[in-house]
Amino acid sequence: MKKIAILGITGSIGISTIEVVRQHPQDFEIVLASSNNNYSKLFELAKEFKIPELVITNSALKQKITDIPRNSSLTFGENELQRKIGSVECDTILNAISGSAGLRSSITTISKGIDLALANKESLIMAGHKIMKMVKNSKTNLLPVDSEHSAILQAIGSSKPDEIRSIIITASGGPFRDLPLNEFKNITLEDALKHPTWNMGAKITIDSATMMNKGLEIIEAHWLFDKSYEDIKAVIHPQSILHSFVEFIDGSIVAQLSFPTMKIPILYALSHPKHIKSTIQKTNILDLPNLTFSELSIERYPLYDTAINAGTEGGILPTVLNASNEAAIDLFLDRKIHFTDISRIVEKQISKFHNFQNPSIEEIIKINKDVYNQTKQNYKNLI
Ligand code: NDP
Ligand code: MG
Image (tube, rainbow, N blue to C red; front, side):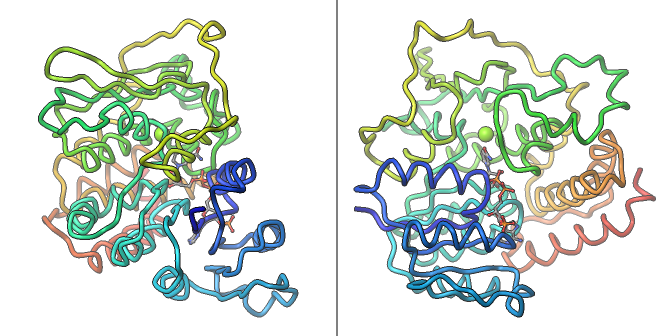
């Protein structure tokens, strides 16, 4: 029985993790869970799974909440979450907090030597250089939850980075894969929130529509698998069945396939290094649709290119990329800007920033906040 913590339990990945735990009651026990605002869902899950430790990161809710589940202890605030991660007895922490808010929890988990099942890719985007160094010097196993990176991990097996020629990440292409470019100006919020193959939280759904998500995943793969940016590419694969390829130096290519569900990569991140018996999803090869692959158009998805350039430049630039993107997405979700303004804003914020290498975690957290706030306040001058 593994003891696990689920941070961001009320989100899309959090709920998929719950479904995995429900099907594997003998394998996993939840000892700590967090949400930001959604306390009613958190409490419902706490009762069902008898979760002893709960944290609500939004401290403003402290005054409002009175009816705490019996047998659970509840605390509030981001600092309290870090304290609980530091003190809980736990085998794996699954970080499914969305956006830059997830960074501190990843850092605390690694500094405690606890295994980290990482859905929060933004941690690696902002602080990959620090995180990978910390992981090397700690007992932590860093296990990707992102389906593409789970596929890559499985395809690599015990091979070393110098046996790998390239990594090819697949991308569904999102809802605007076939939309004529001259119609992008008419895209509505509702259009952008409709992903063709995955049902996810709002931020990553918009990132999938702009293809920023794939750019972020290239940066994520760079850090996780120690490959240079020239050796990692993305291709469009509309069916989302084949989750990524690894090409080896002898010419062999290995891929991982399943019908699209996050439950398989979540289970693997929790059961690693073993695959364990599960009825979560059976993929019958004869039921598969035709699998197609095509080139990803940078004209259609400018943020894909912007993200890779920021990743290649390194330093603080990926943090600026991520913060301005988060702010632009929030503005779009608030209907203050147009879909095509997202890339305009991110590109402008990046182009005027003076980059520097090897930022500290404190510098990353500060600049992330500054760029986010500045983008939200000044957006009219950026579009
Ligand atoms: P959701 O928006 O569905 O859920 C986010 C979770 O984080 C919720 O539990 C939310 O709490 C909590 N949260 C939000 N803001 C904060 C904050 N400031 N501090 C602490 N907790 C916060 O996101 P997803 O589940 O879709 O995504 C989570 C992460 O996983 C992202 O990094 C995403 O890129 C990654 N990912 C997601 C995939 C998917 O299929 N959804 C696939 C691959 C990666 P509350 O509900 O209370 O607001
Ligand atoms: Mg992914």
